[in-house]
Image 1: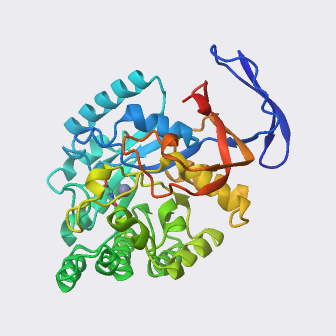
Image 2: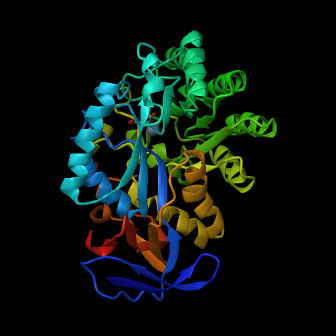
Image 3: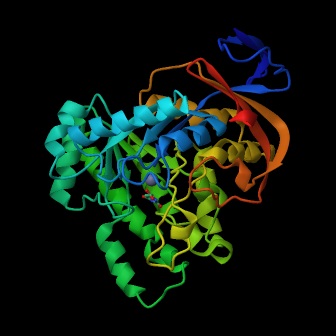
Length: 407
Ligand code: DOR
Ligand code: ZN
């Protein structure tokens, strides 16, 4: 039995806390602050089908180093996770990888909406975090853009009390704008093609479907003021509509194309500083409920391909919590807001069982992000070189205590 003692909670109380762990001795945590471990409602850990980009042996370490003990994994695998068969096969592979890593990372999977398999949803609704609908194409083959299939999917989810999670970008407008800008090959055109309007049209459609069917709706990676206005109105109307944003939309903007080139590609894309400010306001007025990393690793070699061939997405679950703690140091967020965005709201929205996993944080320590801190197979981060104040030091997951300096 080891002890993590004299821990200060976020409301200023000092408590003694004992964590069973055969491997460690008494830890002096008197300088650390205790947080409930983070829940990341949006990750792409790439199993099955793209294990060369990431798998759960590497991603689970990256998660624990970021203070995350629960992840909800997306279905855009190869094959897509959209049937009983693919869900079972994925669970088996993931269990094996976690056993190999010796990390009991809590997890659930989204089921991918595929209009040929919607009839399997009722049998699976109790086993998955939600139904993920790609309303516009992104990485992978999942796409539902015809209105009648969308209505069916929302209806089935409502009947089975399953959360609908959407990647809200309008496929038709996306294609139209792709053609409009077809002469350009600089990566910044990505933000022009996938404009805020492309996202807002799909958000509007999803909200109307939620209103009509009474399905609970989770809007992933909200990135613009136009989407926020629609979500604010839906919440005011009393609809069960929830909004997620990402670290990259909060901490990177479209000026990153100049420094990162094609590495800065992500769907939905990086936006202007003005749009970014709107996201911060929406955190403060609670229009935004959660932050999901959208940890979406691709190799550096793939990311460096020319525009048109380079894939979209960022790794960086390792830096999810430090980025937010640094925002606290800069007085942009309170500790209570961090706990709400990364723990309480995801726990409530996804109805996850309560647990006593914790992260012990040194709020004073400053570190500069280096490649040696990365555990993701991707091996790179858009945040390399940033100095952040506030880092997790220990993470306890299902009774196991991880000293992050040794993981
Ligand atoms: O940029 C993205 N990358 N957006 C997505 O929707 C998917 C993700 C991925 O899986 O690579
Ligand atoms: Zn994603």
